[in-house]
Image 1 (tube, rainbow, N blue to C red):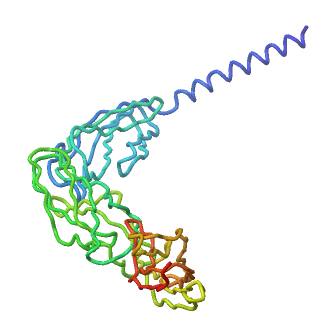
Image 2: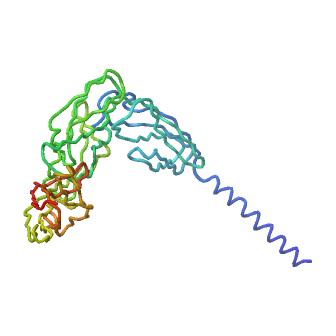
Image 3: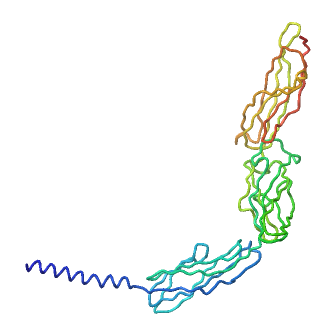
Length: 349
């Protein structure tokens, strides 16, 4: 009984010692409160594209000595930090951000942690008048295979949104900031009220200098502000041509009934990596229509682009008649055709 009593007494003593230690840990550090001071500037109206700096300030009050942490929301520089209080008191902290777009009332939030956790929000008003350009689109296709030249004109389009009535000046540029072919120079669109407007421009399909992989196009605002499309339109222009180099009769005799045999040679040329299909097509004067062979796929890859690939066709005919043959390449927007070469078979049925 004496041993058991001693154990119970020792256990009670240990528990009695643990309770004050836990109570001391819970009370370690100050309780805090936070109050907003304001944002400088409290209101901004104007062009925001260079970046408008806002500074928000609050006071943090601790009821005694200790360390306090604070955290601004993720958009602000100097997002967080620590304050050391040697006694009860109040300290001021600030956070800085740069805004590039937006309209209306906003709030900046800070979270402060001591033995408790508190939050407050500091309001400010942002009125960016910058027009916002949307991502462009190219019609009929961004990735184009076909005939090229200044007379091959497609369309690039986008939307521009303005928060106020104003005249917006803009231009079409590639990723390097240079004008795209066919859409050079500054343009303007007039907003009589806030809203969105579509803008379009002719876009010439010509070779892209210095690249085998494509380029991109954006809308660049000239005034007010200097915004660009957040998402540009990547595009490729693969210029192809078809050449029918020769057509040779190698056999044929009407009197003996030997079928007429023609061998046709040509080539397809591409200035960039691309996939396409080619076919030989014949126009028969008696039938009065083009008859095309099945399309044959071909590829230009890194080792043979830019370059050319030779193609050939052997044709047998025992019938009389005349017509022409040509070489065709199936493009994204129609076919590319070579010059035609005539044939004439004098046999009469």
